[in-house]
Amino acid sequence: MRPFNFTKVTTVKDGITKKEDTGQYIAGGTNLLDLMKKHIAQPEMLVDITTISSSIKPLKTGVQIGAMVRNSTLTLDNEILTKYPLIAKAILAGASPQIRNMASTGGNLLQRTRCVYFYDVDMPCNKREPGSGCSALHGNNRMSAIVGWSEDCVAVHPSDLCIALVALDASVKVVEKNQKERIIPFKDFHRLPGNTPHQDNNLPANAIITAIEVPVNPFNKHYAYLKLRDRDSYAFALVSVAAALHLENNRIVDARLASGGVAHKPWRWSDAENFLKGKEANTANFQEAARIAAEQTKPLEGNAFKVPMLKGAIEVALQNCLTA
Amino acid sequence: MNEQTLSRRFFLKVSGAFVALAAVPSTVHAFYQDVKSFLVPPKETLPTTLTINKQPYKVTADTRSTLLDLLREELQLTGTKKGCDHGQCGACTVHVDGQRVLSCLTLTAMLPGKTVTTIEGLADGEKLHPMQQAFIECDGFQCGYCTPGQIMSAVACVNEGHTKSVAEIKEFMSGNLCRCGAYNGIVEAIQKVAK
Image 1: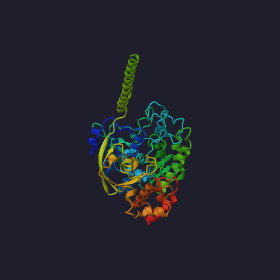
Image 2 (image 1 turned 90 degrees about the vertical axis):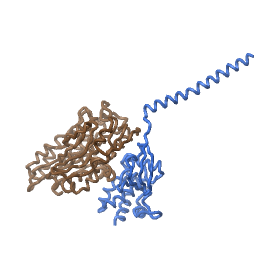
Image 3 (image 1 turned 45 degrees about the vertical axis):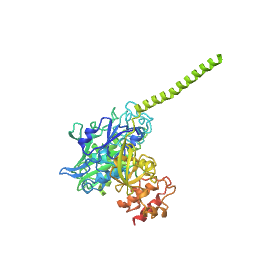
Image 4 (image 1 turned 120 degrees about the vertical axis):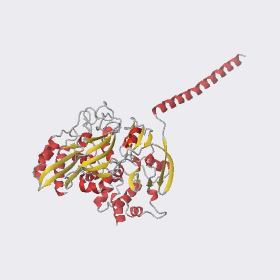
């Protein structure tokens, strides 16, 4: 690791003032330290923000999750479990108990891709070294994207929590360098790679995520999070699906479908959602929704298997919503 | 006379060469130091006060030091093992404020005032912790390298109440890998303690 200066702050204001452009904020550290050990991240200073906003506040309009709330805390919180259980379900599908005890809610949004070439400093990677090329495009890309990718980057976002958050129309509360607060809709927070894949998201430079807000929703009865991966537990998704239905007498009033492991950002299947609205909740309609989603994919040389996998996962996740 | 001049000239030449040669390494060394300080910034240290296995510690550690490095390299508490050093294997699992965490991804600088428990802090004198005893009785290890991490994780798994079924135990122990494949014994040991 490169030597760095370390500062602990107790307020957001202080954090923004003290952080220099060459520095980075540290919260859970589960991704950042790993990247620093591999010399992929080389901050000259770390600003410890672990003492800021770590509460879960029920609001009239929803719930506010402080950026420093640990992942495991979210899975045990009564407010989350009763009104937003999809969030807990998604978190429990990711990482390990140790990592969930450390990782923060805000940090989860900012974790970098797990593309093998991003981690291999001997190989070209446009995300790590802009302009060097994408080794995964025609390389080992079985874990890579099947939708929304570009010639410059085929990496996927590794989060499970973010898939639930994008499905539930969450928003991200940030404080910018000028100390002004701003709300970014979750679906606009992460970016598609385009020709600037080194930028994972639209968080302004030096800004701090202070909270995630999730609006009140009717998706606490019929929901599912299905994650398919190389081993049963403690692995990143090949394909994951967050599904939620608002049902009235078996008719779908509203539907949410989102996927991880398929794109550079947490992906919403809006066309499939729109198809489901007003339809009866049955296998034929679930299959059609899955087909609509799968139709929008464009797999690479090594990951065409993900398309039928996605189709099956969407269908099963929707079925699971009925029994949840 | 001629011989004397020669030897004197010889002496001056040789000693001159020695002086010059002696100067070269020091110049090279100085140059190396200059380049090094330009390329590699000097390390920064930070004092930290924390409690480990009920003992208070006051340490001054490199800001880069992880809790794992502090335990093993500075405090000679080598029970906690370094497996992958990247948060993928769980061998370095310890408890911080009662919660299981990975010491390889925890900076010492972030621990002021925290309470750490390592494998060395589990036994009560000569009396093993029930989980340590259960691992022995159930054959919960072969080579033993992952065992300290497995035991720390297992103790937390029981404390958290994630022991309702074999499937639940396996899921909540999935962050600890064992290359010998002692998983069945580990699950048995946890079931035994959870009863």
